[in-house]
Structure formats: C-alpha cells, structure tokens
Length: 226
Image (tube, rainbow, N blue to C red; front, side, top):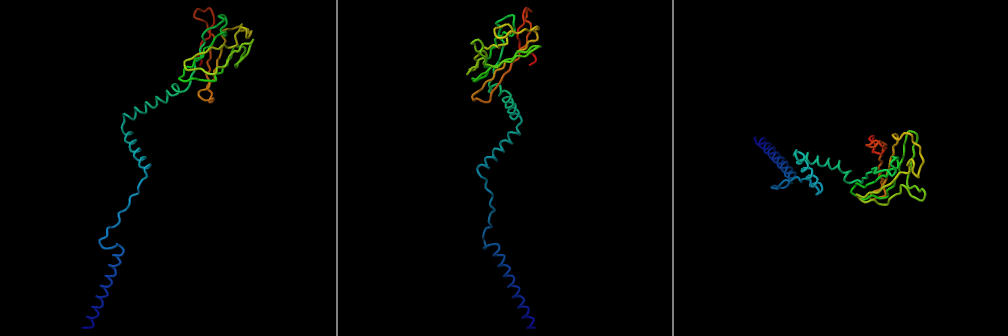
C-alpha cells in the first residue's frame, strides 16, 4: 500500500512540474503579467496622398450631383469651341472695288485684321485663273519702279490695308486676252505671324467673276464654292 502511495505522489509531483513549465512558457510568450498587447500601427499617408484622396472624394461628390456637372461640361465645351475665334489671330479679305470698271481683275482688295491681337510679317500673293490659263504672283513684285503686293511689318487689331493683284487684263501690268469674262477666278492669299515668327498663319480668299446687279459689267464676288 505504501508503494502505491509513493508512486501516486511521484506522478502528481511530475504532473505539477510539467504544468508549471507549460505555464511559464505561455507567460514568456505572452509577455509579463498585466502587460497590454501592442496595438497594430496604421500606415500613415503622406500629405500629398491625403490631398489627393480629399480631392478625389470631392470630385466624386461633385460628379454625383447632376445639375452642376452638366452645366460645367456645357460651359467648358462652349469655351473650347469659341477658343479659336477668341484667341487665335484672324484676318478678312474682301474685294472693295475696281479701278477699271470694264475689267473685274483690276480690283483692289482690302485685308483687315479682325482678331484681338496685332499680327506681323504680313506677305501677299494672288493668282488669276481662266478657262485657258493660270497666272500666279507672289509679292513683292517691282514693276515700273512700283512695288506691288508689298509686305507689311505689322497690322494692329481692327486695322486694314489694300493691295492689288498685278493680273489686270488691260492694266499696265499685263496684256491678257480673255474671251469669256465669266470664267475668271482670282485668289488672294495673305500669310502672317502672331507673337512669334512661327507658326505662320495663312488665309486664302477666292473670288469669281459675276455680272453686276444692273448687268452692265462683271465684278468679283466671294466664291460660293468655298
């Protein structure tokens, strides 16, 4: 009986020692008694990332609002459409009258800067086309000590200047025989710069011969084919 009792005591002591060892290991693994487990740290964002997130949030909120969104898009589209007319330089070329009423090619042309800004380095050229031939001229042209299609260094906004094409039928420039006045077509081209020497802008206006309202003569009018 005493042997069994001793054996039971030995087992109890061994079991208690094993339990103490396991408790010690758990305590070491979990840290000291009463210690608070570490709080997981959240990743902090940089100021730039925070601003980007806030901006994205505002944009999403704006996009979900229907009325301001479509009004803003409409105004933006209108601004894009109107930008070339409001910002880029523009000129207008018109036939203002003939110095020879019998000859529609003996016509003065007025070039007007209709844009908002001054333009510079304006150069001119013209061409005369009929059913039988084509004449082309690029200024400046010197004839009898006179400069035709002379260039201009600057043309302010709203200002105009006049030029003539040296392809007049019976003028001092050319002696041409055109049988059918109705086949005459003239083109006037003006190239110019804006702010910088480049890019170079260009405007070409075509004119066709037509009878005057009283039918007494032919005049040049803007070509309806343009």
